Image (tube, rainbow, N blue to C red; front, top):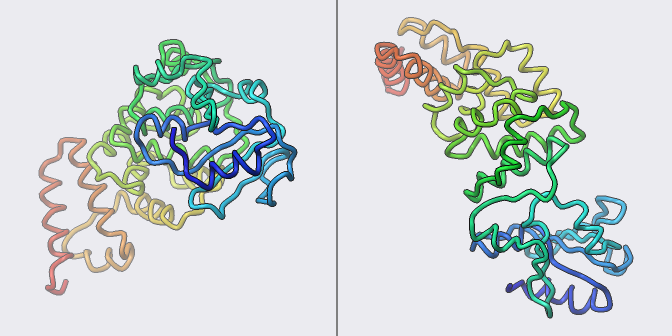
Length: 305
């Protein structure tokens, strides 16, 4: 495995006297030829054996001054690290002199494009993380893990709602989002208001977070949507547009009230047309699609309305 010089210097200079390894997704992405966003390191070194970074845990420091961020877990042995691994790929270690260490035959799993579980997850964040990774690299779950997720009901309580939702957002933006949401509906419905019609609408919307999420929440009462945003600490301004789209989802738009509608919905008008067109297609209302097309053309034209 080829690593950047600054990371090699940390391993061979700053952490030279200690048992230190690169771990995590970086090795997997290297083997798949995918870009590496950040590095993760475990080391037996004491906490402040390197210049001080940002402390994000009792033994973990984040270093953002390098070209790619580095997360270092100090005072962490291989054995201790393995206890927290859920998938075989996580057990791959890289040492500058030993090369890649593969105690759980993870390379074979990677060659077969599968995510194999070392232990079945008991926390929903681990499931969400696994599903997001599976979609991003195009792998499949091993049979035991697949059956577990399809049949097991996980507790609703999560410690990091915002982080949990960020993984959900990655899944929602994948090309096969509606299929994934249907496949693992038992899991997703514990946390998100998934509906059949919303999934059908989402299939026809262009691949953006706003439109896909609006489709997913289409049948959910607006007060429940607000509660949902609060629960998951979602404050991104784009979600204001989702709430606006869903507030006017049943607006009876005609040529005569188009000007007033534009004032109400502003720049979100194009997104509203996209979702309404998707709804009409999902319901087989072709005549409604034609009407929406003509109204949108009027709105986009230079002629005054």
